[in-house]
Image (cartoon, rainbow, N blue to C red):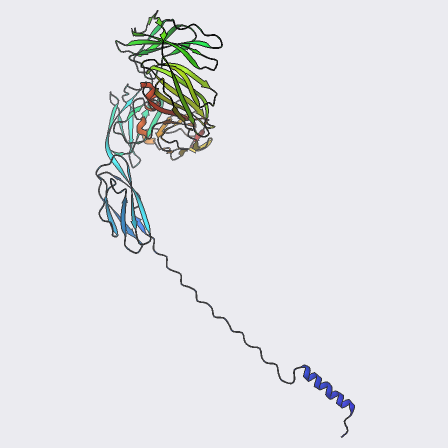
Length: 539
């Protein structure tokens, strides 16, 4: 059989096409992908139940009834611990679901104890304040020694109410079974002033009227005059000669200082004294030189003793003759706190509680070293004083009872507290408003709320804390008038770790000036925040 060329060509083309398609077999089916297994969700561990201690913080009285505390919630064994371990009370057991706490039979004051319960992994605590119960027998004074009768003294009770009494003819008042620390409110209706004393613990508080240690009545005066004779000739310029006369009396008016300094040798002084028969006076006279820098030297001294004072009379020609007196060297270092700038300092000779002579003073200087010549007057002492300022306050420090030859004396000048709240210009101020300030170690603070309009109520607060919440005194008839303009001021005094320190005859002023008033050794500081902080009371 004959095959045509065209047929052969068609056959070859067909074979090539089949070869390009992989032959005549069908392509394999694609494999089905394997679905991955979903991982198992891990189990969430159970949160252990919280350990709960009930009741929470408590205030109890010394010798009071036992109190039961219980623990619930956590698993495991409960153990109990009381801290401090002694003097804070006792526990009925050291383990178990509950425990009975018994307060101590007596305490020296407020005791703070912590009761802690522990499980296997948890702890919970309650704070227990144990208060002392005491009988308070106090007095109210118009000054250091004059009783104030017929005034209302109120004791703040735990429920917010008050128990009030009137002072008797001797200024005495009393309260029984008082929880310590306690709060007293003193009402002074004659000058619309209310004083609040926080944190008292003493059983014999003396509350001084807001006028402070004023002049007792009755009092007398005597005019004493004469000349200072002798001494050394006047120095050459620029040095100057100084005459100082200070008159000490046997019955002085507390904190009423006597002393004058001038370039003249003649003197006239009016001496104030308590009207007590037999009161006498001693005239102390000192002559010295001051160089151009104000440093003293070349002392001469004399005195005239036991002048019988005549009430509202005069003693003339009471001349005092000077003689030489030994000299000593006195040195001291002033220690202003960080941020405090010294503005003045000085050294004063003190013959008696109210008879003084300034020897040296410096103003506008940041010098911290004091080194001067001093007179060695028998029976007299020196005191050192310094004032420093910050942008928000001043501090005046005092160190008394120093010997004329004392060296290495130091005097710290701390920074005054800074008022924090309410800010100046605050409005809607009333009961419940918190007043706060920065701390001053070892100080008691006085907060004064003073009205712009005379006759409206003034509030004074004394506390060692750094915050005071304005109380509601309406039950005592004391209310701040609505929408009234007031200012608040802050002062502090050192040393006074608690309010007990100012609950003494003479009060606030006596803490600062007490060593000075008695011419004894001591160190104190009076601090005051400066600038006006005004506020408006609630409508």
